Image 1: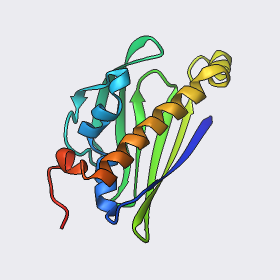
Image 2: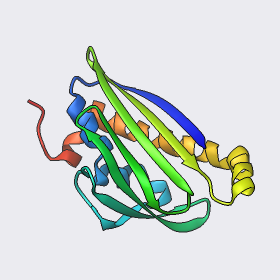
Image 3: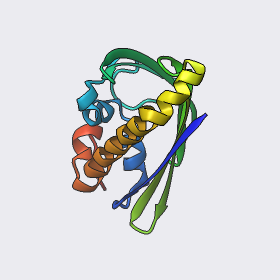
Length: 162
């Protein structure tokens, strides 16, 4: 099983804003514009919650594909995990850990996945897939950071900072 770990430091003094941005379907669409991700079933807007699913249609690596994931663990505002129910991977689990430190939120992503096709999948991981997924997750975190730090989060979350 392959594993990608990322740590993102976000300069904001409200962990709940970051937690909500990470689980926002609307921000996910914005942060994945390059792959034209579209929520087509399950939770298609707003904030995803425990036991809810979302099905995404997107173009990755030249192929249009659909992927359904479910929120399997949820501990607001410190942790949640989503797991693939159906899609191109054999399996995946994406864990999101958050903690507040001074005026910053530290986000740690752990993305564990297993490629399909056995040995061929392992070759794909080595040649391009792990690098592609790392870049995909990194780009998404850059958008989350930008929205949190700039105040643009208000456009997505529709609430005010008190």
